[in-house]
Every structure is written in structure tokens, then in C-alpha cells.
Picture 1 (tube, rainbow, N blue to C red):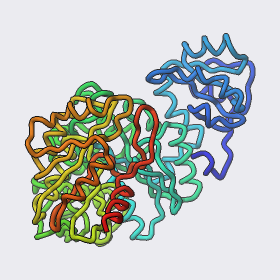
Picture 2: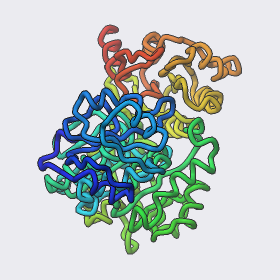
Picture 3: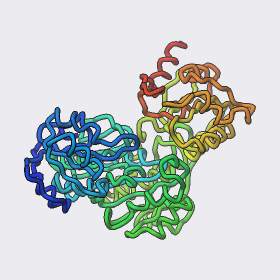
Picture 4: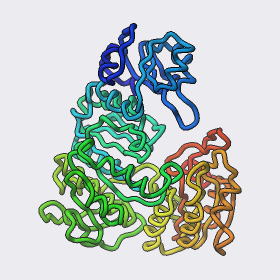
Length: 496
């Protein structure tokens, strides 16, 4: 994101040492940027060498030097290696992870303080809420920025995302770009990984939102309590001034009680919540009509092409945050009339024979259940679902996801997702297809989609779940081009 910066930022190495309360070094070069990635080093950069999951960043020191790094910042183990193999000026600090966010923010002039920055966290719904909020801003003629799982938006410019929440130096450089361009309204998805790894430390949010919490990422966090505590970090004065919290889950209700900042609650069932659902009207798989009670008791009527009860909660969250940013609540609701949400989230693929084909990113048991519940009520025909589970990720959710699909569908098709370094056959076996009589196994994802299209008839819903917006399929370390949406459109075209 640094290539978008308009202005040059420069600090001396000893100014950085002072910020970190580290010892000065004899050489004191000017530093023009910060990066963790040796492949992105530019002349004059500070290369930050962290201990990663498998490799220490100091391993790539010579690559960084060749690219023009002016100095290295590392921990004690990295410093020992650097001092033996290089004369590059080196700063050393303990707790490097937690220091990097505040350092990056300071280096780029604390850009979040000049923005109306909104953060969304939760297991499901982050991306949809972010896109809905950005859509409301756009409809009300506010230029905006967005950072999340699918992409990064800087006004009208778009860039692909590598992760939900980027590393601290890239994040702060991007916020500086937005500040330079006077794009004041910014929404960001905040992942639990980024909170646990301190990527967003040093950022200041006008308000933060919590959607829900359900089983996911336990390969990283270990258990649900640790997962919750990572999310809870965001709801403190270190990050935000206020919060909007969906209290319909036990974790949301608990967070509302424990949050260290003022919070508004939203609910689908509790009419004492600051934002709550009043009534839903007959809908279809092509949209919803509902009314909610908002600020000061205002009754707000909403019609939207979004489907699924969980998207009512997402819409309320987006409206509440939009109102916090100064948007009139009725204007926020009006904007949702043509808001289709995020790419790969209940994204509709046109089918000439009257089959309702929907692509969704659902990749946790709760998300699968929510999507199936969303379409079941308004589907005159059968529900056919296609799903796989990702490799090298939390394996304990695989039987739960398999059961969610099989129990919620008339016909379930188990296939591969991103097997990564695991056997796709073994992953599917852990989804336990033999437990259910309505499950077909087709390991080849393309063939699974083709089979689903072949058996679907007018009035049926075909759900293709798990990958959503993703444009590749990772198998044994190689990412092969594969986009569920493109493959589905191609197969529909071939069948004509």
C-alpha cells in the first residue's frame, strides 16, 4: 500500500530508537518506510524481522539488504544472527509484535486520528457489514475507504486483499494514504488474528462493531474463551470511543456487559435494545422487507435485495454505525434498497431455467446453518448444497459443517475446498458423509458444481458454499485458478 502514498515520510533510526526506548546505534540513517516483507523492501527502509509461525524473519535479512534496507529492527534472537552476519545498523526490542503497531502509526503521523475509522469484528458478517456501511456512505455522497477479506478500496480504486486485516506497517501506510486524499470515512474488518498479533495496535476507531462469535479459528486460538478474549481487546479505550454490539448470542451479551467503552446493543428479539427488529414482511429468495426501531424510538422501514434473517442484523449494524458517522437513519435505510452486500456473500448467479444459484463464503458450522435457514423458508423447491472444508485449519469443525449441510439440505454434495497440504479425501472423510443418506461425495470441486447444476430444477436453490469471492484453490502449496462464480457461469453456459 505504500506505493499509494503521496508524501514521503522520514525519521532517523535514532528517533525510532527513542520511540521504542531502545539503545541508540552509531549509524543513524534516515528511514523512509517500514516493512516486514523482504520482497517489498525499498531503498531506505527499516526491515522488521519477526519470529513467524515457522521461520524467523531474520532468515531473509540478506534479501532485505540487497533490496536497499537501511536498518533492521528485530528481537534478541534475530539480533544475535544479524550481528554475526551483517554490518547493517540494527535495533533490538523485546515484545516486538506489540511495539510494531504503535511504531508504524507514529511513523506515518497517526493517520487514524484524522479519519472516521470504523472497525467490524465477529466470526460471521464482518465483510457484509463493511460493504453495507460503505454502500450507505457512497449513497450519501461520502467518499470512503474499505479494508477487508475481499479487497481494499481507496475511493474508486480497488486492490485485492492478501488477508482480512493487513500487517501494521501496511495498515498505517494505507490509513496515511486515505488521510492524504481526504477520504475521511473508512471501514475495516478486524480479524481475531490481527487483534491477537497486535496488527491494529496504534489505530484509533470512532466506533467498533461486534456481529457474533461461533466456532472457527480454534487451530490458532485453542479454545472459544481465548477466541473471545482476542475479540474483546477491540472494545477498550485503547482502540475506540464507542461500540455497537449484537447481543443475540451468549458471547455478544457477555461482551455488552464487559465492554470497557459505551455501547449500543442491537437485537433481533430483545425490544429493549437500542436497535431492534419490529416486524418482517413476506419475502423471497430475491429480497426482504422489514422494519426496525432505531435511535430515539424512530421506526425505520427497510427493503433490500439481501436475504436471510442474519442479514437483518447485519443491516441494523451497518445503519447504527452509519448514524454514528452522521448519516440520517432514514437515509441509511433508503440506501439499502439497492445494496447487494459483499462479493461472494449470497451472491446470485443467473440461471435461465429458474434455478436459484447462490455463492457464499460460509466456512463455519454456524455460517452454514445461517445460510441454509435463510433460503429454506422462501424456497418452493429443493435445497441442494455443495460444501468442502479447508485444509490446515481447525479440523474439529469438519463433522459439524458436514452435519449442518446434510441436515439442512434435501441433497448435500461434499467436495474439496482448499485442501492445502492435507489430503482432500481425508478431509471429506472427517465431514462424515456416511452418517447421512442424502450425501453425495465428489472430490473434484468443478465436477461437484456441474453435478449440482445438472440435478437442480426450476424452483430449487443451489448453494455453493465455502469459497465465496476466492479466485484460487490451494492444493499442495500451489494455488490453481478457481472461482466458484466463474466456474458456475461457464458450466451454465455450456449446458445451453
